[in-house]
Length: 264
Image (cartoon, rainbow, N blue to C red; front, side, top):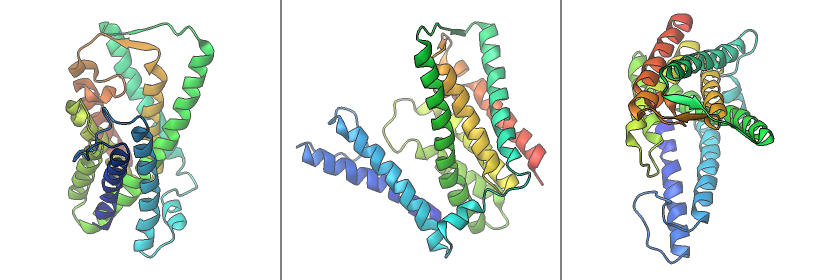
C-alpha cells in the first residue's frame, strides 16, 4: 500500500498550491480543489503542481523499495517480441472505437463537420499524437507499474481484489478537482478495468500504454471533425465516448478480449 499513500501527496500538493495562490490573490481558502472563479494563473499553477508531484512520486516509489527508478520502470518495458503488445493495444483501441463511431454514424446520432483550416487540423492531429503517447505513458506508469503493481504485492494471492482497488483509485483520481459531469465515472471504471487487466495479464506496460494511447489518439483526432446530436447515455462525451452505455460495453468486451488473448 506504499504506492497508495505516496499518491495521496498529489491532491495534497494541489490543495496547498491552490491555497497559496488564493491567499496571494486576497481570496479565501477553499476546502475543495476548484479553479472556477479564481485567478487565471491558478489553473496553470495546479497543472505545474500536478505534473511535478507525479514526477516526484514516480521517482520516490522505486527508492522506497530499494531500487533505481530507471531500472524499475525499464523492467516493465521488456524487449524482444514484447513491443508488439503496444501495437496490438493501439490497433485494438482504434478498432473498437471505430466500430462505435460507425454505429453512431449509421444511427445518425453523430455527424462529420467541416474543418476549413487544413493546417489547423494537421497541427491538432500532431498534438493529439504527442499528447496521446505522453499522457498514456505517464498515467500507466503511475497507476499500473506503481500503484497496481504495489497492490498486487499487498494482495498476494488475490489479484482481482488488487485490480478492483486499483481500478477504483484510478477512476476516483479523475475527480480530485471539481467536475460537473459525475456520471462519466462509470466509463472511467470500465476503462480503468481494461488497463488493469492488460497490465495484470502481461506484467508489462506495453499493452496498457498502447490501449490508452490508441484511445486518446482516436478520440482527440476526431473531436474537431465530428458533432454529436445524441443523448449522453448513448454517445457519452465528445472527449470520452466510453462514458455512454455502448462505450462501457465496448470497454468491458475489450477487457475480456485482452484477458482471453494474454491471460494465463
